[in-house]
Image (cartoon, rainbow, N blue to C red; front, top):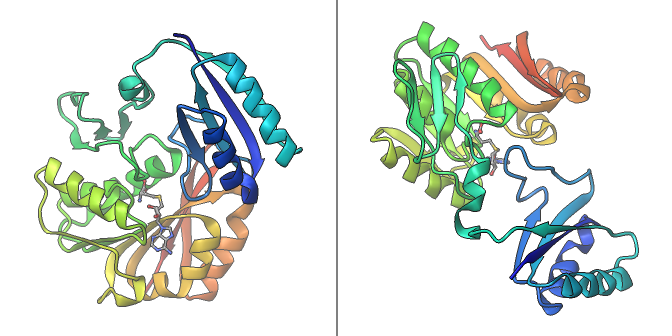
Length: 285
Ligand code: SAH
């Protein structure tokens, strides 16, 4: 049986209706990429205001009929068919997950083994962001390595911890108190699983809101998106007493984010860039 995938770019508000139509049209599986479920690293993401819905069908004819159904409801839809090879879907996605090296840090999936001489963290790639190979995560890992190596025992707060990758790596590098929070309960569960998988204890992972986190931290990390960072600026600065590192920011958003944090009392102190993604570093007295 040769399967066919149908990839649809749709306006975000129409995505749910499109999903229903695709199931009704006989889809055997669906993948949604939107703001709530960003794509896995290396996979094309939706344009602003849009979502990508990928549907699998057993036959091309059903996929073509489905596109006609969707067009009736969402004339603006863009669709592309692709022959999907006979593949074991339960394991095929693994091929897209790669390990990452940042300095002497290594982050990889459980089925890869780390080379000699690295500080290795195993992350089970599931429905939480942060397998290591996204540019924003890599930018933050570099900051974690530099700071934690220079400040053994430092306290670290990771806001939007996702898979836990930054918090767990900080702990591996000898950080003292480490707190990771995320407003997505699934991420918190998976971050806890990743802590156990790596035999790391003593990292406080929870769904607590930033306001509910007590204390100030030598290093505060927030790899979220620009608009969320701007909203959280006063709370993030309020929890920092040393370095504050922001990522999830695109080049054209740099000024807006930097200004919001300067207004909140942080002092800009460099950063880094990979492709269109930047990291902004601040000092907070
Ligand atoms: N720190 C990881 C994951 C970053 S993805 C890494 O660097 O790879 C961003 C995470 O922020 C997501 O898990 C998302 O659920 C979380 N998030 C988004 N808005 C948030 C908010 N207001 N408060 C806490 N977490 C938030």
